[in-house]
Length: 116
Length: 112
Image 1: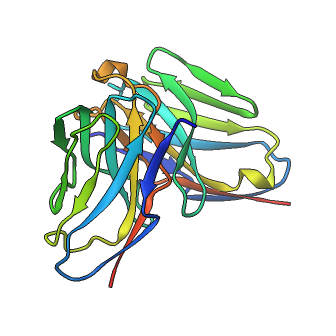
Image 2 (image 1 turned 120 degrees about the vertical axis):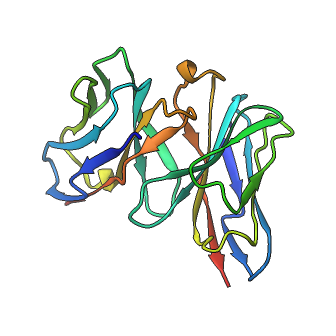
């Protein structure tokens, strides 16, 4: 089955702790994205990557970090610098590296991060 | 800066009704527009993608239109069913970072 997987489904973070959210895709897509969703808000872009070993900050990158060492994987780390991390995190991917080639974005099932 | 607005925020209709969801955007320089469905606590499912050169797309009971010049899109759902109950999100593609810019969604409830 082709698709995007995210793990874990729920994640609990203690004060001062860094946590990493996993995102894997087997769609052979070049571009991958991380979004944050808060109640009553639209999705907001955290980071994106259009090719392996390259990534760019989105609108709300502060307190987050990413890596893109493999085409299939785009993990997101929520650092202790992110003071309000409680949210629903969604990973997405799409084919095409150029802006003009942007096709349908496919989303994973999401990870809900809660602070203890 | 691109802004996407969806009206209404919530909608409740009886089963069988035809309905229209609205989406407006402030910058007409877009590559495409996508409609998504989101069930509670779940990820997004793509419903329809309209490229900037297209006027509409259809899939089953769904029809989406795009009017770039006026900055509007509509999602038409024919003969609504309780299973259509979900939040519908509109997103425009072509932000400076290549990402989608999302509206806040319309929460649809179809009553049996």
